[in-house]
Length: 129
Length: 398
Ligand SMILES: Nc1ncnc2c1ncn2[C@@H]1O[C@H](COP(=O)(O)OP(=O)(O)OP(=O)(O)O)[C@@H](O)[C@H]1O
Ligand SMILES: [Mg+2]
Image (tube, rainbow over all chains, first blue to last red; front, side):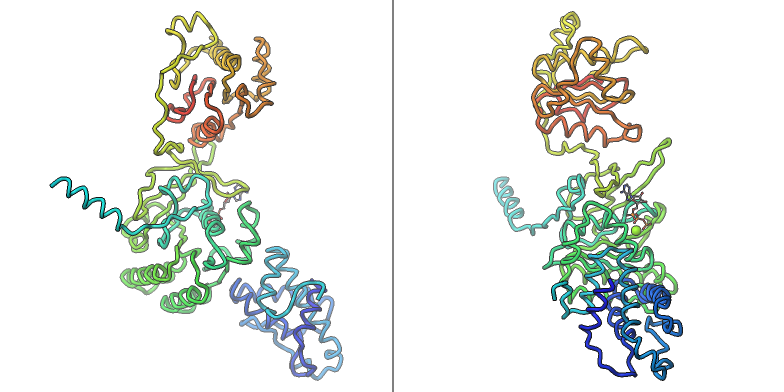
């Protein structure tokens, strides 16, 4: 899921801007199809678990929280930290891959990829691209 | 006059609107329903927790959904979609290609908890309009109703169900609402009144076994088979065993035109030539009096004449049975290896949980009817199978 998350991040073409954190954009893209599928609470609880798992690898995520609506919060405080910007992509990949990994564990890869396709409809998930 | 009456009747059947019947994908269920699931019907699957409602809905959905007319599965509280799919994909009917192309899961929990029934109806209808869904499942609808009853009158609830049914039918969807109900709730329930089809699933304890049963309490527009039908859940999903043993519409063969030798010539003589073909015969007697031996001889005689047979064994394993037959000089091993040949036998051990249920006799009847024109039966020491199950078999000793 890590390689896939990396490709998805590249495909998302997130502009290099301190005010938007890549992790927030990535999880926001998944939020819509996953909420439709698993409900707002279902998505929020998966994201909370993914965030905790990702924080082990990227400690600056420890200050990030999942809001009631299933959005990642707390990036504003990080904006001032120059180290956070460097780690932005790494954090986004860590959260995305843990979230997809959790889904894969529960419902299997084919169904997970289907949800990913809904979130990134214009991105080919084929390895060769 | 009467001639004109007949003409009129004929005209009626020609102009009658045809109701297409969808194959359910559940072995035996189409027969119970009287041919299949009426298209555009509004149905309820009811039963206690764990009786197989979700599995039944999934199996039907996988059999009927197409990319042009996909299935929408609305989850409402109850079992979350993530768990449902985790468990349902263990079943053999779960096909990832169908899932990807023709099935969508939509969570309605937040709407049901936070909004009124009107918003729930709007959300369902919007999804159906944009997807062109042909199959719609709401699991569990009971939670919608429970929420509605907090502050709504029964009339308003009935109005909601009526509107839901009306819209779903207008959009040409075949619908299943799933509910955890107990039998006592059957009366005066507005939801049941609106439904075209009501499928009730049971899970009863009989002695130490669990027996799953199903009843089609109503099915508008066609004649379903009334009564309780046994079913089981295996890795393949649900399998039903219609109470009618698949004999609906079969005239059955004329009995007694031939006599079948018992393998004991003196006994044949006493019986006027042997057992009338197609008869069911009860062999009774105290322990050790030779009932099983006579049954074995009957089967052996069939093999000698090139007639295949089936032995349903309850108290031994097939190898032991064949060994006992070998002691009398009968070879039951070779014929068992020649499965589809005319002079073959099938010795089947029937597990205790299968006993006294229609499903074992149906299973045996099927193997008898499949390719064998003639079948010898020998079921040792048992009040079973019922004679009705055996009309396709030519000989029977039970
Ligand atoms: N592979 C299997 N083999 C045999 N039985 C199985 C198998 N998988 C599931 N079951 C049976 O199916 C039951 C679950 O059925 P299902 O989830 O469809 O019930 P349900 O009526 O929807 O229950 P609930 O009301 O709790 O949602 C299990 O309790 C189990 O007994
Ligand atoms: Mg269920």
